[in-house]
Amino acid sequence: MVNMLKLQHIQLKINALQGKPPDMGILNGYEYTPQGVLWGLLQEAKNLPNNQEIMHELDIIGVTTMMIYERLESQDEKAKQKRKEEKMEKQIDELKAILKKQGEEIALLKASPHEEQKTIQIPPQLTNLFEDSQILNDPAMRLTLAGYFVQMGSLSFQVSLLYRGTRDGFGAEDFHRMCDEKGATITIIETTKDFILGGYASVSWKKSEGAHHQSDSKSWLFQLYHQHPFKSAGQSQIISDRKCGPKFGSDIEVSDNSNTNSESYVHGGKDGYLFGCAQLLRATNFSTLEIEVYQVMHDQ
Image (cartoon, one colour):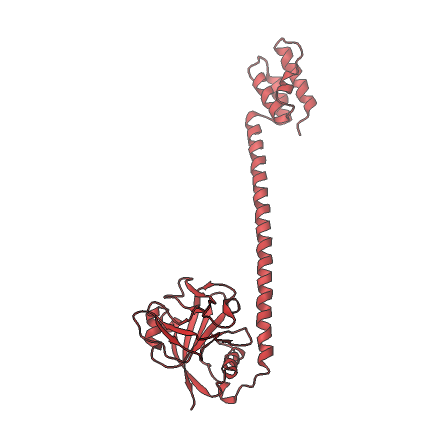
C-alpha cells in the first residue's frame, strides 16, 4: 500500500513550487485513496518547472500514470479470474457429487441381479446361447439374459442372429430388411452410456407403410442389471413402423439412424410395461452404440 505520509509530503512540495500556502485539498478531493491521490499529484506535478525531484519521488513510490492503470486493470483481472476459478471449482464439485451418486446407483443396480440370478436354474441347453453376441461379451451377461427367458417360462429354444447395427446399418430400413416376418425375436440394445436393455416379441415385425400395432401378451422387456424381466401391465403393443427400428409400445422406441442421434427413448406410459422407464434406463432419451436382434425358435 502506498504510504500516505509520503504523498502528503509531496503535496506540500508541490504547494511550495506553486507559491501557494500548504494545502491538503487534493487528498480530500480524492477521498484518501492512494491511487486517486497519486493520479492527482501527477497531474499537478507534470506542469511544474523544476519538477524532476518530485517526479523522481513519485517514481520511487512506484507510480506513473501508466503503472496506475496497469495495476488497477491487473487487480481487476485477477479478481475476475479468481471469481471465475471459484465458480468453476464449485461446478466441478457439484458435478463430482452427481457422478458419485450416479456411480453408486449403477453399482447397486449391477450388484443385485447376479445375486438373484444365482437362485435361477438355467437348463444346460440354454447355457451356450448368444455366444456370438458382441454386446453380451461376458458369460455372466449371457446367462442373465437366458435367465429372463426361464423366468418367463421358456425352457427350451434356439437363437440365431438376424441383425447387428454395426454390420447391417443403424437405419430403420436396415432393421426391417433383416428382421421383418421372422417370428419371435429378442432385441438387445447397448447405449452410449453403457446400459444394456431390450425386449422380447413373440410376434413378427411387419413390413408396413405406417405404424402397424400388434397385441402381444407374451412380450417383455429387460434392463440387463435388473434381476427380473419387466412383464406386461396389460395388453402390450409391438409396433412396426418403417420410419423407426424396434418399438415396444410406449416403453422403448429405437429411432432411425439411432447411433447418430439421441431420438431413441424409453417412456413408461399408461400402456407400458410393469416397471416403467425409470428402471429401464434412468433417463428418457438415448443413443445406441450397438443393436442386435436374434430370432427365437422355441422347441415344440
